[in-house]
Picture (cartoon, rainbow, N blue to C red):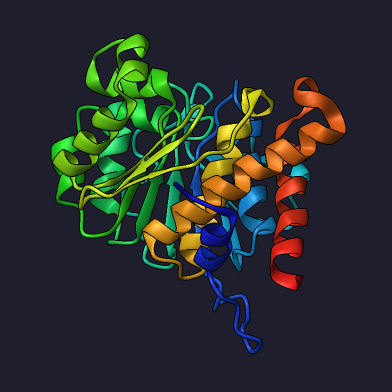
Length: 287
């Protein structure tokens, strides 16, 4: 069971002499014509939780909108087809300058999506990868490739996405959360964050951690995108995967609870969670 003290001690340390290179470079890949906001939330969460650099790779058609929303990020306007990333947009690209790749927020499901995802996995350079949203759906038939990937891989499904990965129902997932999460992580040699009430973290070695926090304040579009950004940020800053997941999930849930005290569980949005996370990081590191 994760405690606040666990989460605080799991935070990556920030040396006084550090610079933007010290604190890592996150690449966020996602977005589509119908989902402009999701990758922005991920990138913003990563920047506001300490990542040194964040590059946002989105279809070139939504680049102007994204750039005005997050001028502090770097941008990679990517080739697109009908508002989605083009199948060839990752080919012949180098990823070795990125410490962490977060893929999936706002990506959507599109013709050629599985081919695009396969191309991405073959192009990566062993850095940590965080997979969320439709990045999970497009990876469901690539688990053999992912299981032998050189770097740490984190999957962050909600119960519906977990059901799609296993070709089962949400009800089955919810009835067996611990066993399903542990078995999936062991079988595919990855870290799994099974979101929901009492989020479950499982490691490739079979360790299981439970986040006791969470409320309906987090049950809104964009909340998971923020969590993806926090995880990617802490990984980029040098946290080991297990520590990054412990710190990020607890911070995210605690921020949601705190913001619901201000706005009610009805009124909390993704930007509120980002701001709440910033406030908590201040409190945790100055007290």
